[in-house]
Length: 129
Image (cartoon, rainbow, N blue to C red; front, side, top):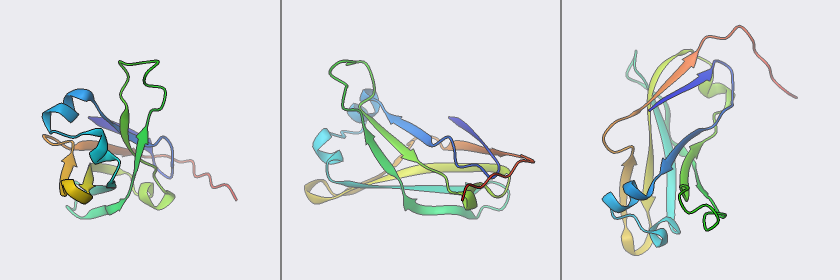
């Protein structure tokens, strides 16, 4: 998966859908997602150093899914901060879901690859006060 964002930008948010196929393949159930923590990490491919390490991310739940049953119910999301996109470059990113309670464990998403994040050069820097 490739994701593009401009340097010094906070939008768009990076989103990774937890499709029904992924949930079935890794035995993830709705009740497991009711009690979990989601974090996001991103590594600079040039230096191998973490730009973002296990920072809180979001689990978005689509409430109108019965109306649209083919739509993805759960989506992992990370909202970038200005400091995250300060340096243009290529990064590898992933989400970690830590299941709490009876179904303890951790799974990294995506499982079989990374998310390629491309922070593109930008001559515009906008900050709202």
